[in-house]
Length: 100
Image (cartoon, rainbow, N blue to C red; front, side, top):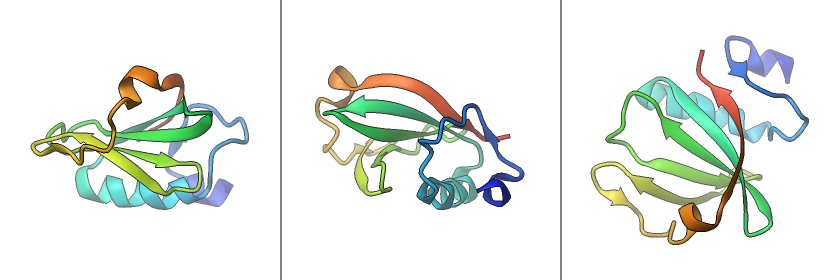
């Protein structure tokens, strides 16, 4: 995992950083540059919220711990409508990644 993280900054390494997130990080950084990822507890599972820092017109996306897409919110289109209740019920745990 160290080789995958070179050039990236993880704010914390608690062993709960799914390696599949690195692929998603690379793809989203290609689209809009810098991102932040926050870890949440949502419906008793760990999920990850990707936030584009400089492209606020793009959607925030939520993935589960196996990097399965759950929903998106925000941006010009307002998201996919599948995040209903996420922001009211999810518990933010920590910032786990910020682009260097």
